[in-house]
Length: 135
Image (cartoon, rainbow, N blue to C red):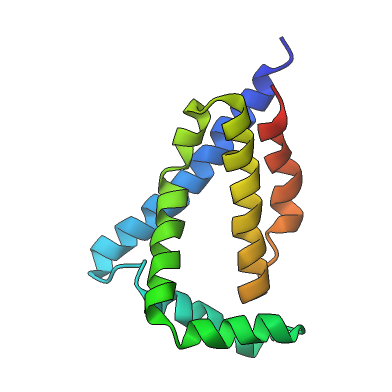
């Protein structure tokens, strides 16, 4: 039927996230420096504060807070790796959970990246992530 292109898109998306996570893990092993450490995320946020400054005071406050919180950045880094590397398991969930994890968590993930780092992935990923809502 006509549903197979949507299923292929879901598999493609899950592999894209998974590849991103495994590349970060492979780079961690190659350079002997764990990507999920707090300083990695702090560096990205610091760079964003100078090259793409946030306009809203609450976002600037969050950026400054995270710059002074390496342990929280470590937690966020590890959660990012788990999210990306483990994304293919989303395809095994029942439909309702697949929609929540596949689209909802992904959109929240990219919204956080846009707010804290000024990198706009939402424009590209929002329409594609709607595939997780199809049955």
